[in-house]
Length: 132
Image (cartoon, rainbow, N blue to C red; front, side, top):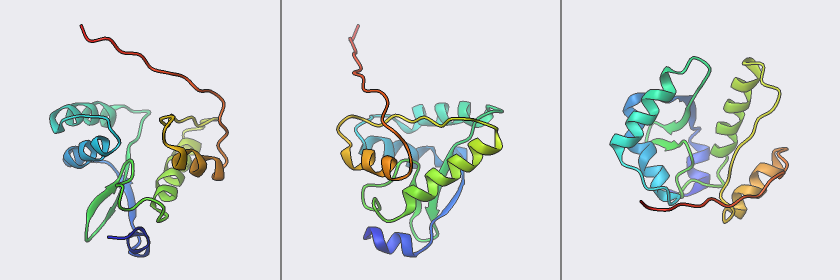
């Protein structure tokens, strides 16, 4: 499943549904953010009931949901731009003046992607955690 192949199959962008929770959780795990389907289902349920919020996914008929964050096998195939564009259009309709996002410091390809699409790097931070 090469990136070019997926992009050529014209992924469709749509609003996320509760039934997408398992696939979204799997995509989070690909990025090193461990989450269960149950946890994602609860998060997604909260996000979907928010009046001033939206969650988008990319899907193809053949492969189903391939992006919320992008499946590692379809990166650099144009689907990320479709998702970002959908989010930006939604933000404009909501009359947002600025759009911000976070990207892990190790994701240099993602940083280049965002910069190519007009985003500027304005802050770097570290996150800390302590198990109790």
